[in-house]
Image: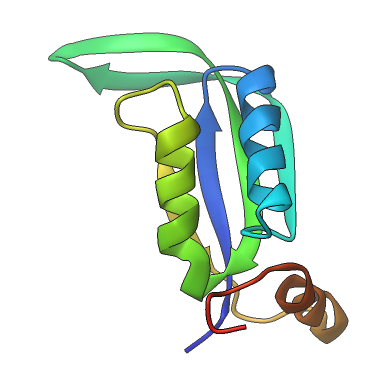
Length: 109
């Protein structure tokens, strides 16, 4: 199994994203969290089209930690249904990928 993933997570604002990102890194569930600038989201919710500002995060972690990251984000996030999706890393700088493993902790470590 490819053990490296990026998780795309959205938050209502930068402060929330930074707070959740710090929790993930402090718990060693992520090697790094990038908090991106705000953007506009247009989406359907409760039968209506909504539009609002949000902030995205990119979480660099192991595939084996997706469940724990998702659980932590859901516990820390103010939304009922936060966006958390996983994107596999298909390759890259081997030293960087090794760093992700060194800086995260799985229950098996």
